Amino acid sequence: MNARSPFLTLLILGLTGLGNHLRAQDSPQPPPGETLSITPVQLFESLSRETKPLWRQQYRTKIERIVTNREKASLALGAVMTDLSLAMMARDGQQIRNLVQDEEALEKLLGVADKMRNFRQRYLTTADANEWPTLGRLIEKAQDRQEELLINQRDAPLASLVNIGRWLRCWQICTSVVIAKKLPDHELAIGSPQLLGEISAVAGKIAEPDSNRQLRFLSRKLTALVKLWQPHDPSQPLPDRLQPTQEILDELIGQLVQDEPKASAPASAQPR
Image (cartoon, rainbow, N blue to C red; front, side, top):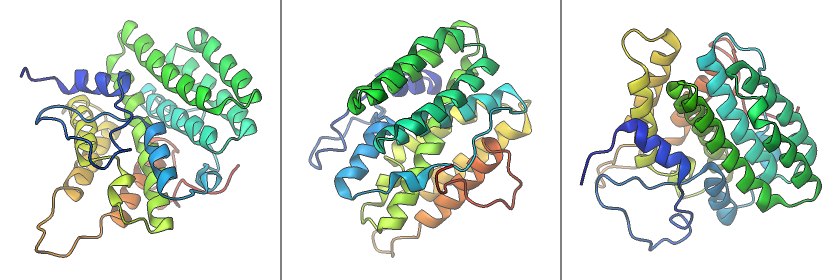
């Protein structure tokens, strides 16, 4: 089997989905080297089958619309797209309206706002009609389109960062729910260690030695997460992974998406 580059793997991860792989416990695992794909919406749905998450408690108190560089704008846009999926799960039309404004502001910074206008308008009409599953699929298609537009304007690293931002925010939400509900399946916090490894590999490729400090920080923290979720010795007690995972994700969101100081509180909080 031909090796797949980390960047192409991430594109495939964003553009394809094996929606049933978390739904059936006896589903076959992929051969070595193949990616087990899932989207944030599918991971949220998996959590909903295990418990009744209080989705609105996971809203962020603030969302930055003015960021210091295009790399942070890309991460922030990815996080907003996951926040849209979160609002869809909460069936919250007003929050969808709030987030559409945030999405538009960040897309303007990245030069793709005009070409994404139709998607933003369709979010609103679909939410107004209470067509929530349709809205979930529409948000995922919009994410694919954002990445396609960035690649077409020769901003492929930014397209990867949008996807990474999606997953950082998704993992932050899911980890918070798994901890709050004391769910026994801890991997629902991250989807799978393989997924985490794929995202970390792409971040490492972007964070070249001459890249900015923020990208190196991102790669370093994702590497720490990968190590945290490595297979453990079954003869030893299961290590506490959830709390350290939450702390790392809160730090990443706080510093790379929220522009918060290092000692900031977690980004997940009550609705704004």
